[in-house]
Amino acid sequence: KTSVDDVYNVHFTVCCKPWTCPSKAFNNRGDMDFNTVINPTLAHLKKNLAGLSTYIDLNIGNFEQCMAFHKIWSKYRVDLEDRLRTVTNNEAVVSTRNGMFEKDYFLGHCEDVGKYIPMDIYKEDVLLRLNEVWQ
Image (cartoon, rainbow, N blue to C red; front, side):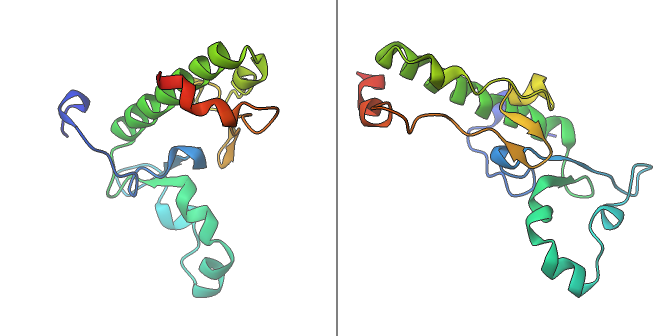
């Protein structure tokens, strides 16, 4: 396990994308088996491909490290929201932080597994002022 401080680039394939609000898929080390979360039959996989991206397979990934990366990603989102609020004086930009799922990691951006709360930046002229955030 590499220290999070020593990582310079993260690809979220194993950890799942932060906006999928993933949870643990348990493994053969005493936790729930990944195959009990996703039925391995072909017909079931065809119907549930979206579900594959909402569980971290602990047979290949480290949950704590994945969640640490999700927290870093969520902090970047919070920073962007705060900057947009400052530029636009629009409180709606930060009103999407009320999710309670794994709040220590997703910082209020997830309601439940697979239930991401997107940024509210498409109202008024918030998105049009995005370039002002880094000026």
